[in-house]
Image (cartoon, rainbow, N blue to C red):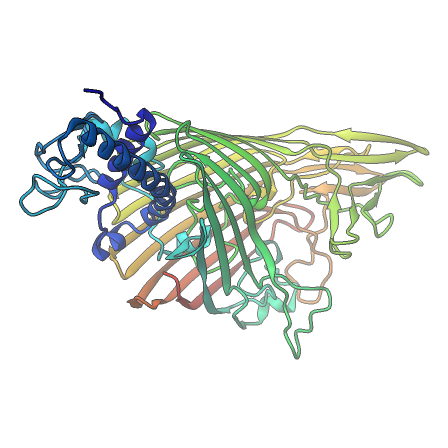
Length: 618
């Protein structure tokens, strides 16, 4: 009697497919609400399963033909036995051996008798269902099939979609649309915000601490109310599998926070859309490599779990400038990340778009195109150029010779999230002295870290973060300068330090309460020549008129900014058509300056924010 063994590849595919079926369990609405970010990962897994189902169907058809041929030669007929696969060992055998339930994708064991669906033929189960399932060991051996393999449980993350911290980072909704093998996921919200402040700083909902007026300005004595819907936000992700282990995704996010040079604030208020984020990612679930290119939150931004896009740890504040002392930018970058130890340890390297903020106090404009006069006739330094083409003509773009280089290590033990990071930046300009030009390049640097401590996991947490160095002031919310100029026109790097501390509570699924303290501080750099005071924080700067309304003798340089803020959010409508939430926030900011002639003036501002949001996809 001749045997016709089925093709080895077909059996391996079938064995793998049944393993997949074992993790394809119904997810209840209750579980989805408790851990909504895992839905993103489940969607990726479903896409892979759909591709493998097509291959499985072809193999099953061929296998049925081979079995029929085998039985015909053996004279056993076609309906006496059933073909079944053991997920625990991947071997073909007749009959059925029960297991003590099975392990789901979330690590939970199902009751005995709840197994994978019957695929074909007859079953030894009297109820007619196919009950053979893989063991725990076989699931662990296929980590790429584990639906939560990209995030380790640290009792902190991932973000709950509805929280404002997640919304700031770019959280997507739970509804997925399909265009062939590509999944489309939408996010964003409709926003209507307002604030009342006891100083007039015409910056909208964006806090501009460097422009808080001193007493010499009439704006110091004027209250201000402002309402704004410009932070209405829309986002979209397109995602598709590239084989079994690799996933490609593109993400874009936009709001209306930009202001065109032709915007009319008196009639149409026609503010233009602006790009917040737009990037491409490639993730390999087998080797645990992660690649990102495009505009995203800088890798210096504290994360909540791992080093993962849209998992940045951002304050729940209403103000769009986030919080004084917060480390962040959104900028172009090329990022490569690797995770180890079952996603508990992460290491990343990123090269990012550079920029340098120069303070030119005491340096008169040599031209209107980024050139400033230095001591001596005809001498000047060029720190940048005005935008042309697709850039803003009224904005001066700094000279840069190389990208910023950022490295980060993040850890996710079973309790908390911890990070260490460092940055190197290369400010670059050119000076012309005595008719001869010379380029100058400085090396700016910084280091810091952050941590999230889940005092009561998912209910009460403490967040701490900080960054310090020289020439990196722009990475803080206050946007203090990175450098001023030396007498020869070279960059004079300013020391910088920033820190935040916060307590965030989620007493229930509808309410978030927060309190933060943030601080950013800058050093000084200066020189004197021919009776003129140059540079940042010069003791000879004229601050004598900072206390007298109408006086222009106030050139004080900011030494530090502190902010205290508390607030709360209430999601008072939450259902299948989205979430509606409202928030309020109280903030107090204080500005300290370096002393000059006349003293060291201070100023402050108090604000109350209101916000109302509809999140149709969450």
